[in-house]
Image (tube, rainbow, N blue to C red; front, side, top):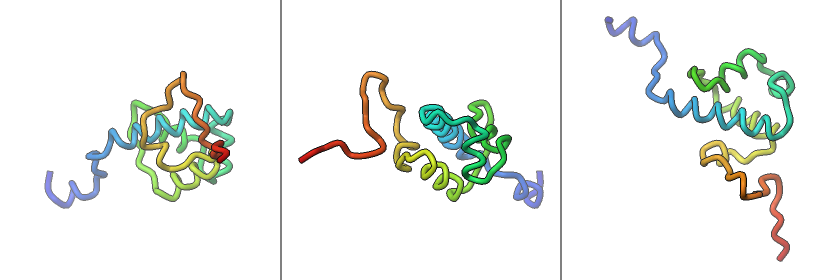
Length: 101
């Protein structure tokens, strides 16, 4: 492949990161009891595009703007999309701090 052709194709160096992000988005969307259609309408993207983002056997790049909008709609801090999934045994409150000091 020549350099001109190579530059037109997206780089897949970060493929695993996008797949992991998509799995986290699906996890927290389901946890919020939202369908792909409901979330996609709230953040103004197509359901098909959200489906490609969430599909673990594909790599769909997407903007930070979309990630910010997903985070806001799901009421999940951005950092949770980059951390291991919560343990089923631990009940961690993500939505608000329950420390009463």
